[in-house]
Length: 187
Image (cartoon, rainbow, N blue to C red):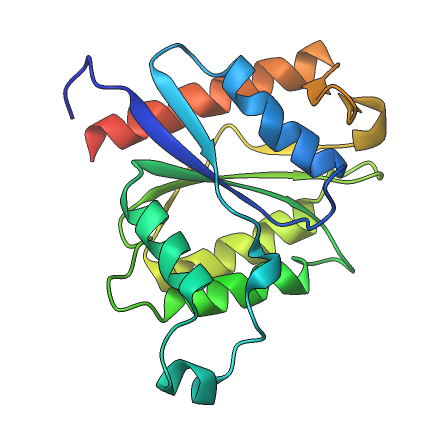
């Protein structure tokens, strides 16, 4: 990749709520990223049907195909997700199950960063580690550090303005985006 070419980073959101705190984090990423990074939030995964091999045999749903194409056209991916019941939300796992079956394997070799958050003190760490295990199957190149696990998330984001209000959180997200962009430039 040319040094002057912007790094295109897609964002996959693991929450369906329009005004979720995680959606606010995702929408704030462009304002945190360096000028040579373009952030694109992918379409909602709400339209993905429950994975079913019979449905797949009839052809991939258009929403799955469109997301696969969007993933192929980006240089890197950030997954922003809440933690549900000590793991990833079922809707995110379902979307990843569909994406994993696409013939072009859009995440194979792709740099991926993970951002989790929770109302508790460990910031979605369990979901993050489960997601890292899932991404092994994809052959994704998961960025190890810096990790973004936002504790007490509600006190650090403003869902009305889609901003992150905590300076330390902004700094770690900025560092992660710079590391992900550097990783993408290497591939």
